[in-house]
Length: 234
Image (cartoon, one colour):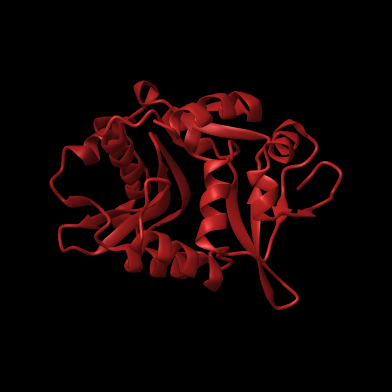
């Protein structure tokens, strides 16, 4: 929430205007904005400008909720930390790590595992369209970890822009036999991104301990943007 509890309506022209966008960047009293524009074009430009968008249902109407975060969690791959328990799982042959083979199943699982899922119908439609129509500006990624019987155990969706990857939301099975598979999926994803020569992984909010356990560091908005705006144009 904004420090003054104000949320302003945001339009495509607002972020296309350099002066307005710079005001948003420099205004550290505001982070959340809202819009009823779920178009792929608007969503793509928001993402490229560094916003992380969720959605909200208010008075039976769906709204996009773009956030220019106060702080970001960033993983540089040389800082990747692999615990003993995850390293042990890596040595087994009981899992299958895939990219973009189970997109619809991943989004369905997100509904199943998250009771208050912010991935609304209109948001899904936007993501579905971008997934089916990737461009040089943005590409949706579906990350999947399955067991030896090809059952989907953990996964997430996010997007690629330039040499960056940004996580949106994910899930992992709560069954005891799959303990730590969510963390395993993240380590395998980090290794994949490093192999593909990504600059860094944007993990979003720096308020969850597991991100720092993975090796992420906290960046202020301005320090994040300095790196972000260079890497997305590579």
